[in-house]
Amino acid sequence: MSIAPGVQRLLAPNASMMTGPGTNSWLLGDPPVAVLDPGPAIPSHIEALLAAAPRLETVFVTHTHPDHSPAARALKARTGARLVGRPPPADGRQDEGFVPDAIPARDEVFAVGALRLHAIDTPGHASNHVCWLLEGDGLLFSGDHILEGVTPVIPVPDGDLGAYLDSLERLKGYPLRAIAPGHGRVIGEPLAEIDRVIAHRLQREAKIVAALAARRVATLDELLLPVYADVPADRHALARLTLEAHLIKLAREGRVARRGTNWHAP
Image 1: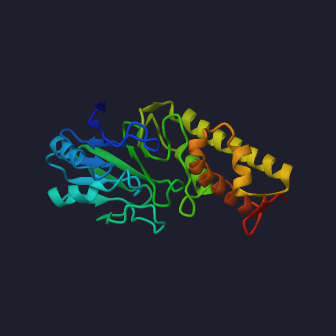
Image 2: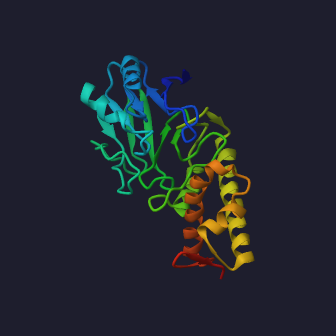
Image 3: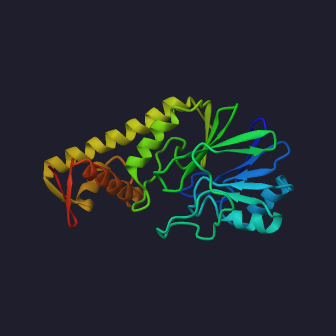
């Protein structure tokens, strides 16, 4: 599917509760010479990428969670393409087979044929997360930093909610036209969407503070239901990860305290 001049989307066949309709792999160039977020190492998806970009030169990744980067290794083996991204952190949730040839610095720009891709470091969902801005067009490839209609899980210890919110604020300083997320459809009105995500996270944080104030002392599991009563029970295990990330942020700010497995109101 064509998204913008020199940009096509190829959907990976890995639909699930976590990935929505599947991972969006982005083909860049006319003809395509780069892939951004090659997705999982599913043979049919790898063959589809190679068929769409037979002269592949570069593979970019936003981060190294298993639904975004594992196909990079196979693409490199088949084409010799250069891998660009940040190494996987050691939290047990990463694609440890991703070994980049180039590690992007903040605001480094890479040529992709006639296109220019601008690296924006955006830690939060993952410490090695990078969003990529298509210069001149204003299309932001957001990986899992910004998603269609939902907010990403912040899985501790690698995920960091404070860094996530800081990264969102920093993105507002770039000339954004639209957001091409790692899952779901392209998002228009990017600044409004960023503000929506920030507001949602702060509203959730306010519920955490209120729930803990009512109890004075509570475990993570005792806070989970009152804070995430609006979330289906089959997603509570994921919500628990982000709840802990919120509490760690609040503890850093001196708004809650942690003693063992208990969280205390100030």
